[in-house]
Image 1 (cartoon, rainbow over the protein chains, first blue to last red):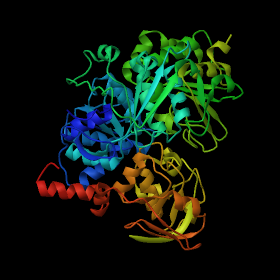
Image 2 (cartoon, helix red, strand yellow):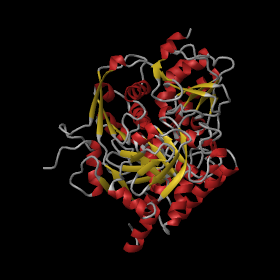
Image 3 (cartoon, rainbow over the protein chains, first blue to last red):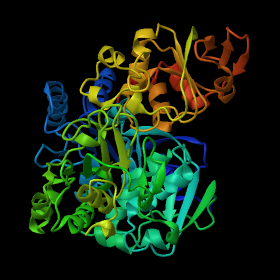
Image 4 (spheres, rainbow over the protein chains, first blue to last red):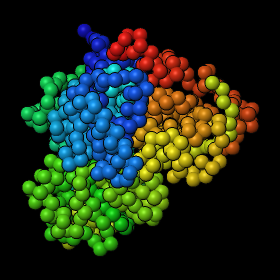
Length: 422
Length: 169
């Protein structure tokens, strides 16, 4: 009988070939997937070459997704994307997608069934923690870690302590998954779960769709966490059914597993909220943010670019127009989601409202392209970070919100709730 | 390794977007990245920093993006060591992997002022503020992490393992 373990401990023990692990222990693990994108892969490939490696550890366990600066924004980006493309072809990497089939990595991989429960995933992108929603231990690393793992299929980890966040009760109408995670980050602070793994639980969390859970897990890193995990339940099983390309293993925590901290939240206390500049923890009710005039609204990203998010945005924008002087940029996160937007009539709603409807890209979230801000401009954004200069000039401002608030703000010209609109 | 340099002092939650803004991530050339290090937090940094200088900052240094360009840019700009109250976890890994010296020492962060000259011994974690004469001891690295540093970084360590085992590490 081993000691009671949390989800993170169970998954790291399993991948280290150990019966049990304890927080603080350093372990070397076999990883199930290694991920990198067009910004981080070039450095990872340099590491791979420096090692003298000639073949990736497993061509079916490597994911290379050009998503940040594609379609190529300039010559240098094109050269980086080409490096990644050439490597993928040289190595016969099976999980490589070209622009037109590629999407934002953290929407694309779950959608395509590449990640499954129980997987240990490292990605050279901090929002790799998104896959915690599927019950995978997934965490962001740098390019050197990714490059080494491309060659060896292995990585080292410090077993994290666990913070269990339980949200109980029912969320009020108009309160979304983004509001829940912003509320949590507001409580914990941007380093409140530093070096730790979060387990999300409670009736309000179980009531979230898979899209909503991915929004929550996605931003675990914004509280400093290494991972943000959900247990697999019937909602997850149904979503995964027929989608997951490999057999998967459900990992559940022991009821008596020791947690470093337990945070109890009443769902009734969560309201539509906005994270003001310049930290994701700087959270205030959207209702107290109406004085903020905006120049741009961005609806998309690995946080909120999934079909459910776009349906919510379209329900607010239907029959309305984006305010004069405001740009509203809508970015479906994958080609399949773009297709759904067309099939469900959402694309027409966005275009009729005067939105920009973009091809999948991370572009504007990190001030890359497709919606960069000038000095003094303000953007309400469904993305994940509002640091100084995140979306453009260091004198611009980003306000993080859910899709309903972002869409309502685009129409009002200032931060607004859907109920504020005529 | 021993370093001596002038301190550039910053606050808490210094994120990787200000250490190296994403608009420069269309390159991974250290010399290109170095020209823009800390640009959105301190536009004068690059013109003032000299080889060996030290950054001292509060909690959660390097939070945000996983971009390894951040420690690479600092190192290429001449920064010898970052002393912080705590580091965001991906930055911590990336600094160790890329050979940027880092030390966790809240007491030193509290006491050291911008512009002080400090000497740092990254082997034993000792920090001395040469301007005030105060001395501090940073948290030692866990043995496993110290091994990576002693091997000359993760790449060197892995290369040796691959050579020893004649294939997979």
